[in-house]
Image 1 (cartoon, rainbow, N blue to C red):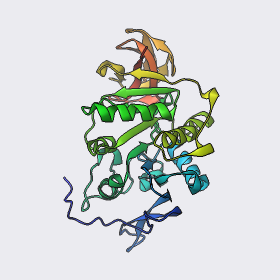
Image 2 (image 1 turned 120 degrees about the vertical axis):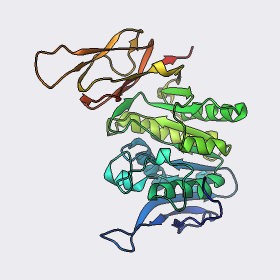
Image 3 (image 1 turned 135 degrees about the vertical axis):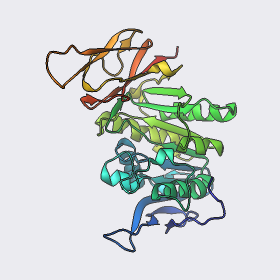
Length: 339
């Protein structure tokens, strides 16, 4: 656990209490071969207008996920402070080293930021970023929106998500914020591996927390970007921060379909290595036992492909993207629409 008396090595050049839009950096010292007294520079924006709630908006928790950074760089450049009441803290590329490398984890230390919370001020660079966010930014926030997508290895239906929590009042606030985000799909779930997640740390501090999965495949699409841009404004409007005609209105967006992931059978994991042939795509309905993909052994010709069967009925919420799979790779994720 982080020693709360230990100072963070990260510094910030912005005044969080000053009205207006401010743009600067979190500066993390990092001595290395090409820069003895160098630093990792993590862009940050603070937009404030008087009293009101504070929202912490983050993207690039994983460095190969792009809808969030696009939406947040755009918001930081275009939002008029006069249109808000309160404060918005924007970290468009929270894991800046991974984002610049286009990788899920940090090229500096191999750290997965979303498995490194609450972090350590005396740990690896990734742990130091997590520690600064935990001790210096989360205490300022009333609500948190952390953008994710499938990165280079998964592609998702565009969805916003929250968790089933012991604190039912907090759970209800998170669910309302997901509704306000207005993605085509929404998911309320229990994480199978929540240790070290940003979500877990923020929720333990009582913060309204929303995350997303807005596509993936190592890129972003006009549709997924539009969902992200509209969603962040809906989130801010519901929080009481975004006011007036800045609040989004998009009748063409349609209603949100809620999904459930009841158990571990929602995940289909490869037990073999080979070339994957998908037989279903995102949004398709499947029944338990359906063959949803085939894995072709590629060591030599003449071998029959191995069928991959759905372990439960539902719709395809996510799918594997690269053409090759290894044992342990997630082939597909199935979810159940909630009536």
